[in-house]
Length: 202
Length: 202
DNA sequence: ACCTACGTCTACCAATTGGTAGAGAGATTT
DNA sequence: AAATCTCTCTACCAATTGGTAGACGTAGGT
Image 1 (cartoon, each protein chain N blue to C red):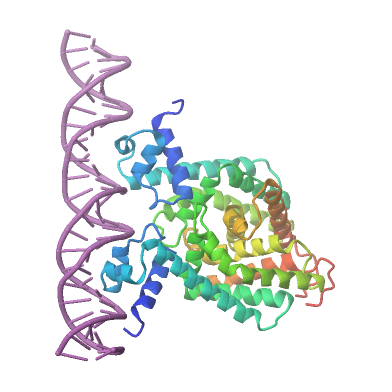
Image 2 (cartoon, rainbow over the protein chains, first blue to last red):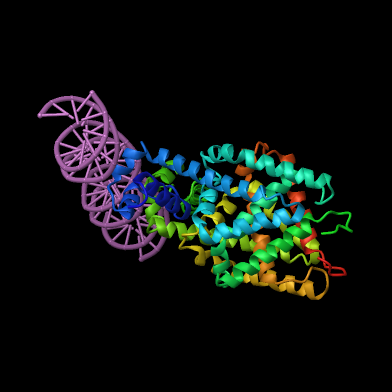
């Protein structure tokens, strides 16, 4: 037990909620998986809903930290975009449950979207400002940054999370196909984001 | 009761599973919502799982029919792609639960992906062949059709379903923003799919 | 008139759900 | 040494879960 109980619960819950979903994960199942009793979970988190919210907070923190780190490297234009996409793919491989949780939270009937959104909002704003800045500098295709960000978000998370679809389509999710998908996606984004008045040195 | 009971159950179940999710929807809740008893549901469908599978089948049928109809119009190149995107957006507005169900089924831990995939596979193959043909004819950017199809699928469904994200980002999902999103997405796809004309710098 | 099939219902049931109450063991503080 | 605090546990509980058994009424077919 290197990790304190509270952290262990959070980790396991993130994985369970991110893959099986919130409703499909009972506290008993979670506890058994951790080798503890359900009441221990309820000691650390007053209710199942509270645990969910704590999981969301933890995930949001992780995500924001990751992107802040990547954004602070000061890349510009398509290079920055490409770097971010690379990060998301790394996330999809190393911590798929994190992107799974994002999908779970942003589901149509969800009540917790706002909680996640509120914490991610500053990073989104920064990204929007970045896009606007790069557009003004002529390094990106000029369009509505918010719309663009939404498209990029959907595309990247979709591509990264929907390995099941890939598998179901008969494409084994090996490392090679993952790389190929990332490259295809980057080509996709480069084409869509390249400044319209070409001659853009890249 | 214009619709026979079995159909009514399927319709309500599709909506519930597509928005709240399978695990979060109890048979009792579904029955109450229909003004019948749970046992009536279990008369028509031997188990909850069987109902789910019937819902998937129905949804697959609807999806395939829609796309076959669209594909049979014989458009080419980007026009065909744009027409499909239009259909998906119409779907997202008129029957959001259908796309929601697709998302539910394609979730990481899902066991039912294959059932949906199997029924949609022919349409996917046809789409892949279409892309290949159009690439050969020089009307689309040449790349791996399967990868491309995956990217397009993720992007379109992602953009169409993630209205919650849009709302959480402070963008009210009005008709106008929906149109704007579709246009942005089409611009996105056009840029990515346009045949590569020339000098391969980049 | 009788029988059978069909569709919906009431009555249950065992298992599981999230959650409460509080005991008890180990530390830490007083 | 006594008291308090921290953490995990056992023992329950009421509500809900998916599912079974079978009664009841209606409609046709004979």
